Image 1 (tube, rainbow over the protein chains, first blue to last red):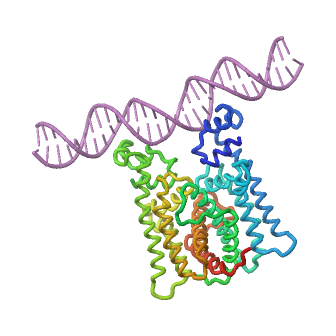
Image 2: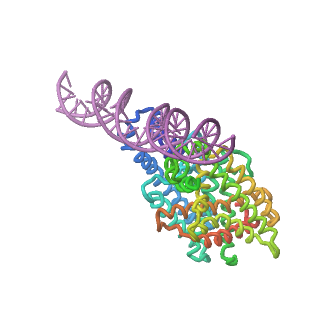
Image 3: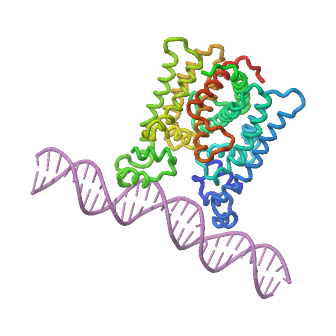
Length: 208
Length: 208
DNA sequence: ATCAGTTTAAAACACTTGTTTCAAAAAGCA
DNA sequence: TGCTTTTTGAAACAAGTGTTTTAAACTGAT
């Protein structure tokens, strides 16, 4: 199962064969059908293992930033949330830990582009819940923001995070192309700074 | 070939069989191997048809925003550039035009996640050139920005654009999940406003 | 009309995919 | 031990993949 995790994250659903998984896991092809009932079932099993954990990590990060003692700022919230994205990345390099954890972020962007999960499982169990609590946090922290703009600025923040990671992944295959190679730490620092300024200046900006 | 374009954009490289393409094009399976020399060659042929055009469209948009008579602003540049992303999207709805054009943006995000193009073709012929001229434009428009920050803020802008389109694509499969369904027009208006504020406030922000 | 060259068509090829079969082996329990 | 149940293993299956083959059809100039 850890083998499946690793391979799915690395090559995606379609490009991972049950034979590869079986070989990596040191078991037989029939076993994975025996225990999981098919490749697809195994795929969602791998997801279930992470979805809840990562969702709670995100929600916890938000709550922690909001209920901490001391003054809470927009920057704190953004940084705390952004770090849930980069954390798995640094976890990989810190130790030769289970790579699945870090690669899972890549699998998330894969699943967004072409989904192989049961309908809406990803958005139902991850996107929507996190969006809700993050939206509330941003709303109370930035009362001057019109409520309709809250999901939009969140979309902007998440977009930066996802894209930064996707580009980082892309740069692994080609180097030196004008796009900056950012370390995770630098990544969250930049995105927090950019987004905080973006949100603060959002209200003052003219419509056009 | 237009059939290939359509199918590749809709289902990606792996999930499109030459038999499907042949059927859609009303020709034989052998023909596509006869003319293009394989599925992969056909894929890059489809890309070549768009890569140059879209790259020039982006570069033109930047130059147009920079050399226009009247006062040039950061907003103008951002809007002009952002519109090159959304333009193909609205072109689809405006008329029942070749869908390939609009779908191609989706194919771009696919190619970023798992590439099937010859090494670096996409970043060499698209990312790098556009990055260069866009970087220069931002640099002259925002002289207060430290040069090292220029690629980073561009990454943020592009990230918002790509992610907004990816999410839009995802919402086509599932509705109502907390994420706002943005029309292209609204999309560029928001991203321009957010990013302009983000860039302007970037210099003033504390480091942490 | 003849004969090159080019284009089409159906079938076959070699290979990979996910899944199933079915007998042998292992484990649990009386 | 004996017997049932659960697990494994290798092979087989059916379906799908990209590509190649081979012969027929077409094209266009002589």
